[in-house]
Image 1 (tube, rainbow, N blue to C red):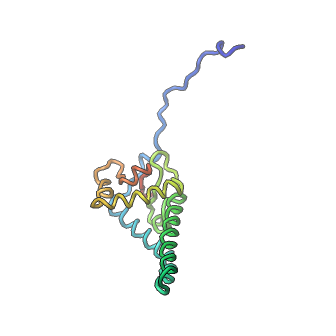
Image 2: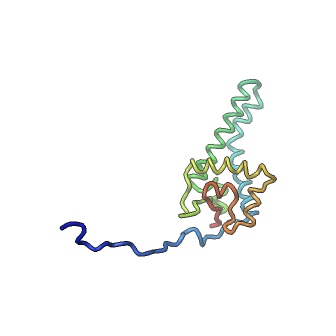
Image 3: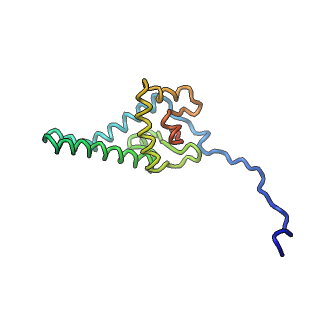
Length: 152
């Protein structure tokens, strides 16, 4: 039998609900507090580097400061990308998730989101404040990374 003898079958137009659409989005003050918690967690990681920087001078101090930046950046990207945020952020119940399916976003997208968050803060914090008039409460860096911040 040839394929032409079978009737053509097409899938019906099925609308699959977005699992993240009905989740409660974290508000401005909760997100600000969650970012503060991220900072606390990263400070704990930064302490050894700060001690080395403070106790040395010149090249060793500069290398320690560069290492501190790189390590904390990638640790935060790892936490966000694989777990939705730092341990303290998660304890608050505030998670950074994919806007389409609610999954974790992966380290690469988390790194892009972190870098864009710096841009969000450059223009009078407009990128952060934009969440106040966005229906999904997304900041500029959320829109670039296609993420939402939810309260669970």
